[in-house]
Image (cartoon, rainbow, N blue to C red):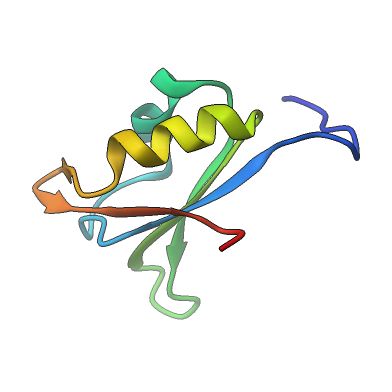
Length: 89
Protein backbone atom coordinates (compact mmCIF):
# COMPACT_ATOMS: atom_id res chain seq x y z
CA UNK A 1 0.00 0.00 0.00
CA UNK A 2 1.25 3.45 -0.89
CA UNK A 3 0.79 6.61 1.11
CA UNK A 4 0.04 9.74 -0.90
CA UNK A 5 1.36 13.06 0.34
CA UNK A 6 -0.95 16.08 -0.09
CA UNK A 7 1.28 17.53 -2.84
CA UNK A 8 1.14 14.27 -4.77
CA UNK A 9 0.32 14.31 -8.47
CA UNK A 10 -1.81 11.16 -8.39
CA UNK A 11 -4.49 10.83 -11.06
CA UNK A 12 -7.98 9.37 -10.93
CA UNK A 13 -9.08 7.73 -14.18
CA UNK A 14 -12.61 6.79 -15.23
CA UNK A 15 -13.26 3.70 -17.35
CA UNK A 16 -16.59 3.04 -19.07
CA UNK A 17 -18.14 0.12 -20.96
CA UNK A 18 -16.32 -2.72 -19.20
CA UNK A 19 -17.68 -6.22 -19.62
CA UNK A 20 -20.24 -7.32 -17.02
CA UNK A 21 -17.92 -9.89 -15.40
CA UNK A 22 -14.75 -7.76 -15.33
CA UNK A 23 -13.10 -7.75 -11.87
CA UNK A 24 -11.08 -5.26 -9.83
CA UNK A 25 -8.04 -7.50 -10.24
CA UNK A 26 -8.40 -7.58 -14.03
CA UNK A 27 -8.80 -3.79 -14.12
CA UNK A 28 -5.60 -3.36 -12.09
CA UNK A 29 -3.71 -5.65 -14.49
CA UNK A 30 -4.80 -3.56 -17.48
CA UNK A 31 -3.28 -0.41 -15.95
CA UNK A 32 -0.18 -1.80 -14.20
CA UNK A 33 2.01 -1.73 -17.35
CA UNK A 34 1.72 2.08 -17.29
CA UNK A 35 2.85 2.66 -13.70
CA UNK A 36 1.96 2.20 -10.06
CA UNK A 37 -1.76 1.61 -9.54
CA UNK A 38 -2.92 2.80 -6.11
CA UNK A 39 -6.43 1.41 -6.51
CA UNK A 40 -8.64 -0.18 -9.14
CA UNK A 41 -12.34 -0.60 -8.44
CA UNK A 42 -15.34 -1.69 -10.49
CA UNK A 43 -18.52 0.24 -9.68
CA UNK A 44 -21.26 -2.10 -8.48
CA UNK A 45 -25.01 -1.82 -7.89
CA UNK A 46 -25.50 -1.51 -4.15
CA UNK A 47 -28.46 -3.88 -4.11
CA UNK A 48 -27.58 -6.61 -6.60
CA UNK A 49 -23.78 -6.39 -6.39
CA UNK A 50 -23.64 -6.59 -10.20
CA UNK A 51 -21.14 -4.50 -12.11
CA UNK A 52 -22.28 -1.14 -13.46
CA UNK A 53 -19.65 -1.71 -16.19
CA UNK A 54 -17.65 1.32 -15.02
CA UNK A 55 -14.41 1.51 -13.10
CA UNK A 56 -12.13 3.93 -11.32
CA UNK A 57 -8.35 3.61 -11.28
CA UNK A 58 -6.03 5.80 -9.26
CA UNK A 59 -2.43 5.99 -10.45
CA UNK A 60 0.47 7.35 -8.40
CA UNK A 61 1.81 9.63 -11.15
CA UNK A 62 -0.35 11.78 -13.40
CA UNK A 63 2.14 11.28 -16.27
CA UNK A 64 1.56 7.53 -16.07
CA UNK A 65 -2.19 8.11 -16.00
CA UNK A 66 -2.02 10.30 -19.11
CA UNK A 67 -0.05 7.59 -20.93
CA UNK A 68 -2.60 4.97 -19.89
CA UNK A 69 -5.50 7.14 -21.10
CA UNK A 70 -3.85 7.79 -24.48
CA UNK A 71 -3.00 4.11 -24.93
CA UNK A 72 -6.23 2.52 -23.67
CA UNK A 73 -9.04 4.86 -24.71
CA UNK A 74 -11.01 3.21 -27.53
CA UNK A 75 -9.29 -0.16 -27.20
CA UNK A 76 -11.02 -3.51 -26.86
CA UNK A 77 -10.72 -5.10 -23.42
CA UNK A 78 -12.46 -8.40 -22.73
CA UNK A 79 -14.53 -8.01 -25.89
CA UNK A 80 -15.75 -4.46 -25.18
CA UNK A 81 -14.53 -1.13 -26.55
CA UNK A 82 -13.73 0.94 -23.46
CA UNK A 83 -13.59 4.68 -22.92
CA UNK A 84 -10.89 5.96 -20.60
CA UNK A 85 -10.70 9.54 -19.34
CA UNK A 86 -9.24 11.76 -16.65
CA UNK A 87 -11.64 12.35 -13.76
CA UNK A 88 -10.51 16.00 -13.57
CA UNK A 89 -12.14 16.99 -16.88
